[in-house]
Image 1 (cartoon, helix red, strand yellow):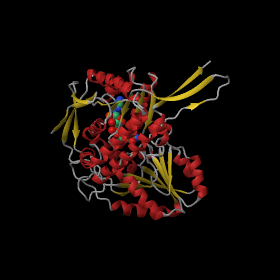
Image 2 (cartoon, rainbow, N blue to C red):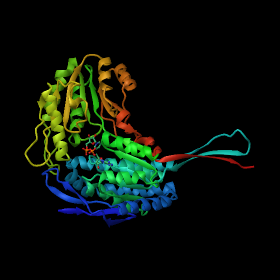
Image 3 (cartoon, rainbow, N blue to C red):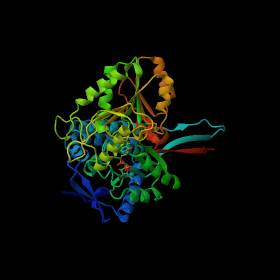
Length: 477
Ligand code: NAD
């Protein structure tokens, strides 16, 4: 059994002194694969102190120098992809090919953020008086506390580390307990690329203890969290008490609209791929398939046929196209939601049963005739389940699309420019992709509205949240 006994503080791996540990389970067989030892208060204090010292060094490093170091880190990510992707599949379960794609996207993200760090422009405002200069500058907000999720152990961490470091901030990050080896590889990458000691620190332990310590610490100036709405609200409240800026990337329950005039074959292909990617454990996963009555049967049948072709198994096997869920807890949660829907009258068109009795394997599922009375139509399933129901009119389906407190991603398939325009203007979401899969690129905004959170982790917006504005008015005579 492996032991992850180390924290990365002030540029070195050090032993955790908290005393406790968390068991890490292998998602393919449910057995304990490793032990994760916990940081104690003195470790957290050391990490914050390192991030303060690191911040002083890093903010004084030129944007151009930071850019070069981060580009080097992106290169190292590409070079180390073979080992890290294998580790990601082992810890998280996704098929190796998906892990490799995540690595490639993450390196691209880092390149983008590195570049953006060179463009944190200020401005000069014409003054009302002679001999007065009015200058606006953008400065790094300070040391950041970041909490990243297990579903994309590298890319979701890079969506925080990239813009923070590019802006000149330092960071104490609590990576997910489930994937310490994978996310921990980033500590070595940034260190080897030349990021100074103290700029990036990794701590593991009891999540609530770590967040309470870090968020209330006066040295920490910004909080960034990706995870569930429940935990996100708790963390945002804590940040509010301490007047810390916040970025929240939380859950979703994405509606996918398929209209009578859509290219049904294209919609089926793209939506099955997107639904079952990473076993549905994706915040932007399409979940509520709202299909116009004229094509409902055709879409449903073709979707089920396509989903039947998925090969569920150990992600390390080359023919696997869908791996296990992350944990036994998640497996049971998804099954409970499916059972509740069936009890309330949904039709189970496909799958939904556990595969074998070891590991967290679930058959890809399709439920039709779902209604808003079912839990699964209100709670994020975060698993390989597609929900389908038909609709008649655009007004009716926009209402359903906006019904939930979530507002992250949405998808639509239509050949009508008028329909696309109404969806674009009336949906309460952070992202909408029409007739293709176009979300999550480095240069495009990534984030939600309503309970799905606030702030963006892509595009030019991402770096904004790590900057503060300073205005200097200077009478020169
Ligand atoms: P969870 O809410 O139990 O935990 C999610 C993460 O939050 C974990 O990494 C955990 O360490 C951390 N966490 C929990 N309590 C914390 C605290 N008090 N302070 C700091 N961190 C804390 O969720 P789960 O059951 O592991 O995952 C399923 C849910 O998580 C899904 O419903 C989904 O909404 C959400 N999720 C969302 C994303 C995303 O990309 N938005 C990613 C992963 C998980």
